Image 1 (tube, one colour):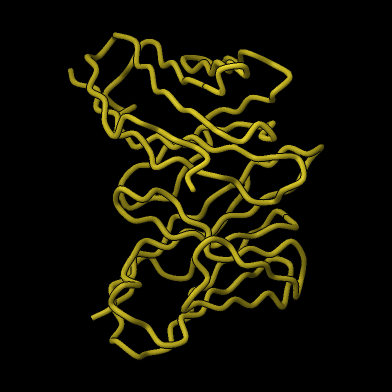
Image 2 (tube, helix red, strand yellow; image 1 turned 30 degrees about the horizontal axis):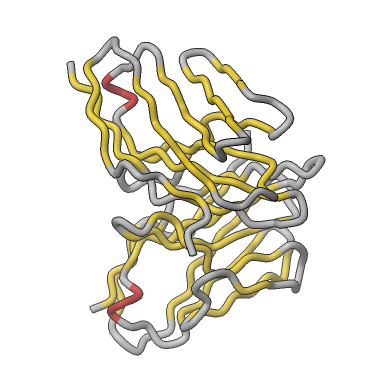
Length: 114
Length: 112
């Protein structure tokens, strides 16, 4: 079974703090993704990475950055947290197979920015 | 612009009956479609998928139907169980892309 883990289930941070969210997958997947989920908006892609040190912007990258120094680890960084970044953050990974892409998700991190 | 649309935010079904969740898409380049199930405070769990070369895929109580001409897919759950109560997300991917496009989700409530 694919296992995707996220460093924290719940986080409370103050406005202006730098926040690190860590994600690790154990299935040697090339692709990793960061989403946020908000009520009524579904899952929105923040950033993704298809290889070590590679990153691509998703639909809502503003206010975020990412780091992928090792294949199994993908970090999401909130440079200066703001209250509108209060959300559920979901990490996913996938092994691209014959053009079909099944993403496997971690349990999520619920972030509250005060 | 939303390329994958789930027009019903919620659905309520009695236990034992059929649940039908619908999804429409606008991008004709999408060739792989997935359904995910999500419980509150958990990550989405992959449920079932279908390739564009098929029009039906079945896995136990779950069946996904794809109508390419209508750009429409649906998830059938038969029989529905209270444990099926969750938010269901439809997603789509095109062969040249890495990222999935998700709908906004449909919240299913299965009542005893």
